Image 1 (cartoon, rainbow, N blue to C red):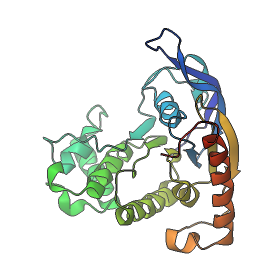
Image 2: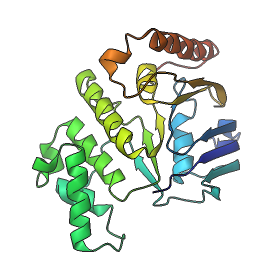
Image 3: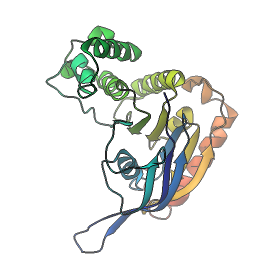
Amino acid sequence: MSTPKLRLVNVWKQFPSEKGKPLTAVQDLSMTVQANEFVSLVGPSGCGKSTTLMMVAGLDSISSGSIEVDGRPVTGPGPDRGVVFQSYTLFPWLTVEENVRFALKKSGLSRARQDELVRHHLRLVGLEDFAAAMPNQLSGGMRQRVAIARALVYRPQMLLMDEPFGALDAQTRMLMQELLLSIWQVDRTTVLFVTHDVDEAILLSDRIYVMTARPGRIKAEIVVDLPRPRALLETEGDERFMRLRKQALGFIHSEVKQGGSLE
């Protein structure tokens, strides 16, 4: 399966405001994500990280500039991009299996092939024994695993993740990070990952883009030179991890001093 390259060039995003003057969320933002690469966006609260991801997903329009996936302009949502949000966005009236199968509704695949894919992806996220469960019977971490399975089941070329573990407790978050790493190690799907957690970004990523305070631009690009495979407990004690953490936090704090927020 081929995976795309993502390219944003001089992207601007403005929203109308009550006072008549447009609110600029993202300004002159340029970045790339190579095929099979895991890239994270970090920065102060309100800097436009989620807005950028929504524009890549085609769920929000750009005001100017260009966004291309595999050389094709992004004009709206598409099956080449799977999206996982922080909220669990599951259909409460469908079972776990039915939620995952929903992503294949317009695939044209036979029922037998759909069954095979659903079973495989539930096994991938460790939920094969919960196929008949309803979302309200699951923990937050389990619901997010369903959301990841649903985003992966139709084999998108790129996975877009907007703080998918932000609402989880620390222990569950660590388990989900390691689950995502294990899945990515196998499929190497191109990933753009939004997070406010620098440690998470370092653990997961090949590269990290640090954004400025609003209006968001790219302030710095950090190459994560840590060997793979990675596990949090081992990686966080590495001297290179501490160096990268200090570097990223330094960039973010310099923006907070200019009016941004760490929240």
